[in-house]
Each structure stands twice: as C-alpha cells, then as structure tokens.
Image (cartoon, rainbow, N blue to C red):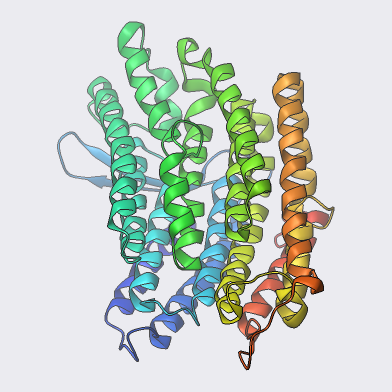
Length: 472
C-alpha cells in the first residue's frame, strides 16, 4: 500500500503534464484548462502526501515506504524509492509552492500552458529526487530537474541567460555522473546511498570521486563562486512561477548534502568545511548589503532567499543527525513564505507600471495585498508566528556552538535581512510616496491569490505550535 501510494505521488505530476500538453488553448496568453488540470493534480497529490504521513513511523528518521524495481540492463540496476519525514516535508512544501506559482500567473501576460506543463514536469523530477534511495535514481532525477526549468527560463526570450543556466547545471550534472560511474565500478550493480560509507575509497581516487560529488551539489547552491548563474537567472525572469521554481532548485543541492554528507565524505574533504563556511557567510553579507541598497523589491526577495539557503547550508555542515528535522521544518515554512511573497511581489510590480513604475505607497490602495504582504513579511523576518522562528533559532544555535565567529556573522546577516525586508514594507506602505496617474486604477490580488496567502499564514501559524500538526 505504502509503496503504491509513493509511486502515485511521484508520477501523478507527469500524468498531469501529459494532460496539460493536450489541453485546449483558450488564447495565447491564457489557458484555464491547463491551470485546472495542474491544480487538481497538485491538490490531489497534497492529499496523498498527507495520507502517506499518517502511515509512516514519525519517531524514526530511517527511510520507509521503499519501492524496489529492477531495470534489466547491464550493470544490473535497481530503481528504489523511499521517504522519511525530511523528504516528505520538502515534497509537501514544493507542492504548495508550485500550487501558489500556478495561481500567481493567472493574470500574467505569458504563455501559461507551456509554463504550467514545464512546472509539472519540474514537480515530477523534484518528487523523484526527494524519494530516490539508490545512486542511479538520484542521478537521473538530479539531471532531469534543471531541464524543465531551463525551458521555463527560455520562454522568457532571454537565450543568453538560459544558455548560461544550462551550462552551469549541465557541468554540475556531468560531475555527479562521473562520480557515480566511478562508484558503480566497485559493485557493478545499483548502490543505495546509505551504503556508500561501506565502500573504502582511499587515496587519490577517493578524493576525486568525493570532490566531484561535493562540487556537483555546490553548483546548485548560490555560494560564491557558484552564485552568478542563479542570480542572473532568477532576477531576470518575467513571471512568478519560474521565479518560484528557480528558488526551489537549490534544495536539490542541500538535500544531496544531507543524504551524502554525514558518514560518507572522507576526512580530506571534510577538512575543507571551514573554508566553505567562510565563503557562505561572506556571500551572505555581500547579498545583504546589496539588497539594502537596492530599490527593487524583487531583488530584496531574491537576496532573502539567497541568505537563507546559505544559512541552511551552514546547518547541513553541522551534525545533520541533530538538525535534519529542524532543517525540514524550516525549509517547509521557508518555501511557503517565499512563494507567497513572490506571488504578491510580481503582482505589485505589474500594477506599478500603471502609475509609471512607482511602488511607493502602492499597498495603501490594495487592501488584500497589503494584509497578505504584512503577514508574510512578519513571518519572513522571524517574528514568532511560524515554524521558521523556532527551527531557525535551533539551527543558528548549533552553528554558534560549532564556530562562534561564523555563527555571529550569520546572526548579523539574518538581522540585516530582516531590516531590508521591513524597509521594503515601509516603502510600500508609505502614503507620502503614493502616485496615481489619471484614470489608471490599480487592481488588487484576486480572491484565489488572497485565499492562498491566508492559507499560507494559517499553515505557518499552526506549524509554529506543532510542526507535524496535520498528522498528530
């Protein structure tokens, strides 16, 4: 039962993608049929994920609901799927994020059908990656993840940015492929990720293999010098759904580190941890000061995402057997907050064009957007109204215990992130900056987007009281 339920969760978005691709187009820029198919697929999958939670033993962090399928090729390869609380929390958060993303492009002048189709394919690859137990399955979905996202970015008619995005992610995928191929030479069969520690990779060969895996995951996380590709791709996208999907991609790198890092990375690679931790906090500081000086609320949101992913990377470098669940709870709340903020941010930027591009005071005439934005900003900056508060506190305390200098800089950066988010809220609520031209009346977010924002606020508040409130 559990195995079949897991397979349905993984492959249902792919089936939805096929139905969306053959759905009827109402107009070049609007496709309600495609949106309805996607929304029903995602909502049904969320219901199945909640059912799967109720079947799991939540007192253990071991992988459960394992589904094993033999692929008759040489070398023999098992395709194995399984989940634990970490992977299910991330899977649930990603489903909610893409659900919000689809609602957010309802009024966007974009090719909605193509965007929704690629978003469902991206969701399929995310679910497959998060439930992959063996190396081959993990590699296949790791490579697949960036392809539909590359197509989404390409729809924005920015071929240069899309090409750079493909090059960076393709290089990271190639490095992981080479490392996994080298590991296959030791067993000549499929290898579960948790058994990699049993392989003794001594000497120069072990350093090369683990370095390849390490760098492949780093390519997915926006830390210097790997940050440029994701910043250029994210800031220049023209619709909130692509922005949200691009924001989800670094989770594949974090999840890879969590699965591979604790017992498997050799001592030679582990000794480089302080160097990468310093790179993380330096990049966090740079991003925080850049966002503080920027006037674009989209850039401020991107910098917030940037900073928190690096914070979670520092948490992964700490003992993940302690922080694994806290990382899962924080990332779940983080995905909901950032996705809902992206939906409202793009709406505000589009409406500001009606008044000459001025954003100052715009929330004063958009009451529903104002209420939703205030609630989400309070959650984002760390007010005790969501699961982000306690779990980020625990992660920061663990980082401080591991390295007082790095932890202090991380706390300072989080404080700066809170300041520039509150600064953006002040600008958007400042009546003295309000400028309306002629008869151009601004439109508030619609009832579905407002309902999604309130749903996020309620889920965040309940997760603050108890992270797994929906199963206990």
